[in-house]
Amino acid sequence: MSVLLVTYDLKTPGRSYDSFFNTLKTQGNWWHYLTNTWLIQTQMTPSEVYTALSAHLSVKDWILVLPVTRPAFGYLPKDAWDWINARLL
Image (cartoon, rainbow, N blue to C red; front, top):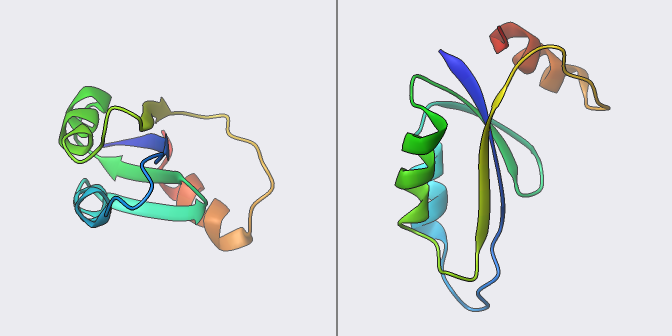
């Protein structure tokens, strides 16, 4: 399994994004500490995750799906790093 970073800007005022978030949560084991950024441990490819999520976005919205590998650096709470370090290859 790999870890994918999913980050987005949802730019359509008044639109319900419930289906987007529900679909995001079903892509695998996930972590979400940063606004508009999720890490997902999954067997799916970035293209497969993008395809699943893009069906719930408008043409004004932006999304980026990338694989995450070591080394990783940043300033996050310990439990966030515990999740990340337990899953990165």
